[in-house]
Length: 422
Image (cartoon, rainbow, N blue to C red):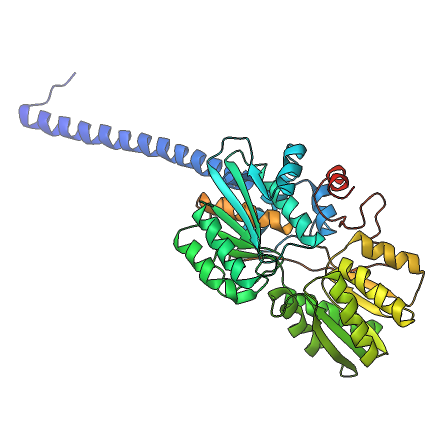
């Protein structure tokens, strides 16, 4: 073997070192690239499966039950993932005895020893729709081992008490607050207080308060302006001309205001809205209001409203008292069993009922969005579901075996509904 001279030997050793270093760098880079590729692949797989403590997958049967169609999910990717995570949890088994007790006592300890507290706070909770939403919230909360306490508050229609109750939930250490803002933007001050304390606040049933994503975390539900346009399309097709009336919940509530603002301008010029009255979503008040409108406008051809059961319990009685056949087109938001069965008993082909899903299960999406926010997820300010109205003539709300007070699109188990409404 040729041994180089000293100067040549130094150059040779230096060259050899550079070559070895370069080779080592190539090998290291290849190894890192392989690791990076595996990490990226794992992350991609993880993203597809879920994230932020959730799995982005739900039973298609559950989606079809609560949405009418398993494909009627939000279009936005993150919104869709949140919905899938929420509805996926509806398959989890929970202690129904504890859920019922929690529902009856307006809150409870979950028994998991979890450190988190969640709250459902609303100004008004005294009708069946809200009772069922409360149970949906409780059932969803019980699927989280990290939740150790559930708080529920209703202000019994008192606006100032509603603000007090919300602040009380903050003071009691609520980590997530879900709400329905019956009085609209009056809730902004307390929503902001919670947001400043980094407490996620999410509303459901399109409980829109100004500034989602800023004043509070997010609003969940269907776009109620599009709901109003869908109502108008039904009226334009089935009424064509004549007088119709609008009914709403509490004055200024975001749900009623939203669809009413968009239905009226979308109506044919030959259709006239001759009345627009609040009912506070109270069936007895519905009867009074409908009676008054019929006395002033005896030829009402259509009614637009949210609360199907309230209409069944109030308007049917008003028509009977007035001695008038219920010949009208109804566009409603909720799919209450009692509404469908009342219509069925009349056997009146001139009564046409169109409805949307009640949306009680939207409260599950709201809670899951709040829980994901705690884990660092970026929650869209608006989580919006598509709208598809159903016709009573083609798909009845009168589902066999369900209590009259219930909605068949609710994800509260039927055996539990029977215990709630024996």
